[in-house]
Image (cartoon, rainbow, N blue to C red; front, top):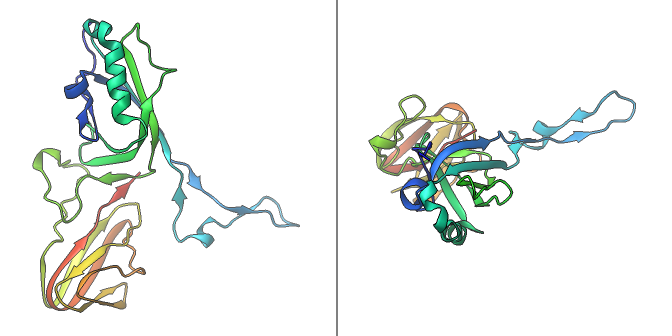
Length: 237
């Protein structure tokens, strides 16, 4: 039987096609369920949705992922060894999961072999598990990004490292859906203005916990003299 899957999935340091000879043929990845909060108010119809009153943004539950792979008939006799090797590697461990079709992002969670869906006779192996609701940008704003992994349709080049501030410096950050508090590192004390509010920044790494970078354009205006780096990693559904 000719392998249908010519792509693979990177799980931690192991690539399913290159390391285990498993061709990836299907994925089942649902969108996460929102954590909503409702209150029953006597004398009124329905319920009162107070989700945004409790948190400024909607939080999500984890999502399920199921990956189906196919191996060659010639590997049938070594099936038990293959299953054992994969189980020993993934069981109980939390890994980054990168799909060949979406190399600019990673999911993170715990996987295991789905014995109910795996079919030895057909060379079908299914790995499933529980992952965070968001997929995260593979490279943070402080990492060196690789051209081969860049998606020209939805990728964002982030170069927020070692920025020279000499008076005033405006940094424009395109945020994704997940609200992020960035880590800011300064070579000397300075200040930053975000949405009209000024925050003092000490020398070294720190967080201003009222600075949430939202979906869309965010502007950080640094004032002072020194070098600043902003660590940001976007999260998307």
